[in-house]
Length: 454
Image (tube, rainbow, N blue to C red):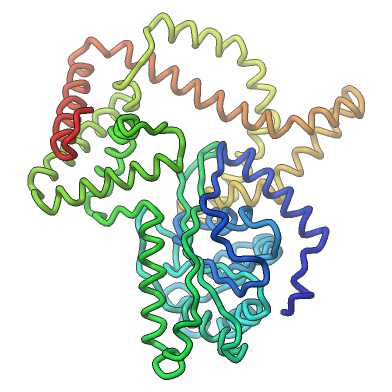
């Protein structure tokens, strides 16, 4: 796999541009690239190592942050077996299969030799490889155990080149505002490149020691970049707190809660203070967690959100908003002509081929990008030509992405209005008073913990 063969073809560039536009403009509302200047110059043997939380969405996020090179990804082999279409698509965007004993069986491990040798050759030829050392995606904001396979690959690539080239490892993290649905927010954050050159001599005599030392540095950086909630036992309560109280905490720090990079910083601060307080006074903090879970349960039962307790417009305002939404509902139905079949087909395929909820986003993006979105564009173009003319058909196809975004946002805004009206109706009831009292209790306890009045 030499550098000549890795030059970006026009077809690959066009395919990647198409995928990036859907990824950055339709699938996500906002995407952020933090510290792109830390990416070494093209031609540097570079291994990007990242946390893994959202299946195919993680490698795609990294893929679309780097424009000037073709990237090879090593990812779990079972996703290649979903279907021939999935296999072709994954390989087309540079993914290579890594087999694991606990999922693919011990007899499959020998197949990794070909993948690793291809990746090592790509590295030493000055290309970029991406690996996820957790060897499986997490369904929460936390960092799992690392396999040393990535350090083995990096050092063996250096050895393949006679230890003449400086192989570098770039720690990275992916972070999401929400895992499911579309029009969420996403960021990729890069750390500082780690040169393997200072470890070459150690590797020659004590390879495992060299790998462990490098792994420690990489893991420390990724932990510092990401939101790593280590208290898994209390994860649900902590996650609820950061999504409720954390909004007001961010505001108190002068941060816009809707700006994901800044919100990541304040969420890390808040979670760190909770962890420190829990170590100092576990009983007190666990009572706070119990209050948070009680409030969450009450909100779910009432079918409203925490935002309703923070601020809800008046009943009249909400009714006017609802009337306005109903008046423009014909436009929503028009948008559903394109949006609903795409979503329905993608989710049907997901439910047929996967039981892992974390694969939902993978199917939603990959199947729509490869199949349902182009198919609907072709169908609507044909219908437009038959019912009007070719120019109307072209115009409709061009606005299809906007219609998809409108359909999703309309649905979300309609749900928000219904939540608001539901809260208006129960706000003066015993239930409403209980919810507000629980919120006040939670805030008072958290204010004591972080020593701040919010």
